[in-house]
Image 1 (cartoon, rainbow, N blue to C red):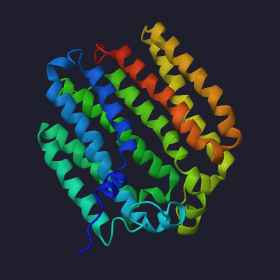
Image 2 (image 1 turned 135 degrees about the horizontal axis):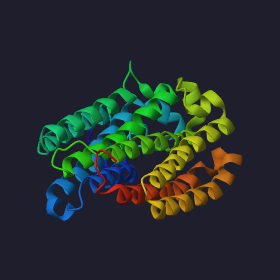
Image 3 (image 1 turned 180 degrees about the horizontal axis):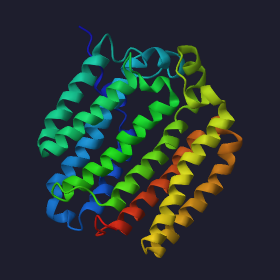
Length: 294
């Protein structure tokens, strides 16, 4: 019986992708309490759940159902290369999902339901016949909601002892979910040819590379501009100024990406996106302690 290579399993689970939902959970947690140090077990269990478990499960699910696309776009991935043989990719995806649900149960009903919803979105994103990713608009929305909004709201709720997040926190969760829609589009430029052959209607396939880059930039920038406006309305001008500066930095880096999106998407993911997510944390600290009626 052929077994998968241990290193190939780690590659399948894509640790590099775990950061965004963990960061969103941390941001949400900050909006939910100013006493994280008093709730460290919940905080760290939530980080474990959002990144190495739920997000890793979604990567395994996606790689299994994308194995034919990856054979064209990324033939060295663990499944098409044979380093994870047979149906082991599917078995790992199922096992990691079950472990995620088990760990989520230790965070109470809220943690378990959030885990269940995230996993449903992960499987529906990749698995036929739902396969949200076949449409770039819907697939990126599902990822944005799961990776950013759901993780943010779960962190805020759990760290506040089960209290519904404040209105400012919920607004930020929604706005940064919209920004994540654009971030997800960045991943699609490397796979245009394979997606086109396999019928995956990513935004670059639907709109062409240049127009898709413009749409991605709009999704990333406009929600942040709204965040700045809201912070000014909420009486947080210093935080608004910081995020405004971060937006300016992103605009500077976007110039090359908008001209050559296929060549520059990876560069912008590595340098522009970290600036965006830094603003998430700034916004989280800005609304810390703001009540539900703000």
